[in-house]
Length: 224
Image 1 (cartoon, rainbow, N blue to C red):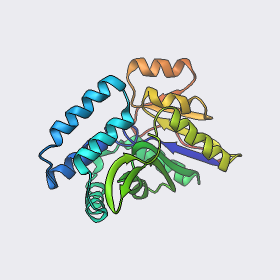
Image 2 (cartoon, rainbow, N blue to C red; image 1 turned 90 degrees about the vertical axis):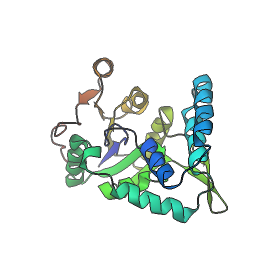
Image 3 (tube, rainbow, N blue to C red; image 1 turned 45 degrees about the horizontal axis):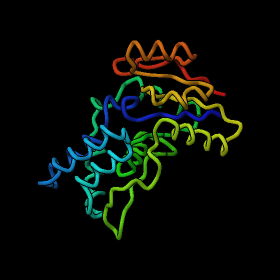
Image 4 (spheres, rainbow, N blue to C red; image 1 turned 60 degrees about the vertical axis):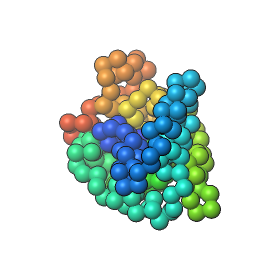
């Protein structure tokens, strides 16, 4: 059995998804004080470098207090509106090859559960693991209800997958240095869409590299 673990932002999609999601929401639900709160959140980030806190600050400023129905309606619109230009051709090809080989597809993202599971379902993933956002009495709170699924936390998620599927071979795809902790611990790691320096660093530790943005992707996935 093989498990194929895919990052989302910059790996499957060409760029970040959280900010476009938030911008689209704000166009439909303007928040006059959002800019001031967002700048305060960015100032805190420059001091503490806490990406999870920044994510929470932006969501609270832009979407705090929204109802589940309001969020759901925007999520459906946002995910349906992701067209071919937003996805890397090589990523879609790799997903299809793993599916054809009968592998278990897992989407593992630091982006949030307001929309990532919907993207996972659209692309045919069997499981999605992402950063969870808190609700309070039916309205969006914006605090993180789970660890930010990034860096070492992604490694912990992969280790929990191994506990559930102890005999599985794990293939993993990421695009950033923050993906190195779990890429280094799987049998079939691939770094995609990275710059020259990052590709060189990956090669030095035995991580294969590929370019998915304008390319059909890696070679065929063999059944196990």
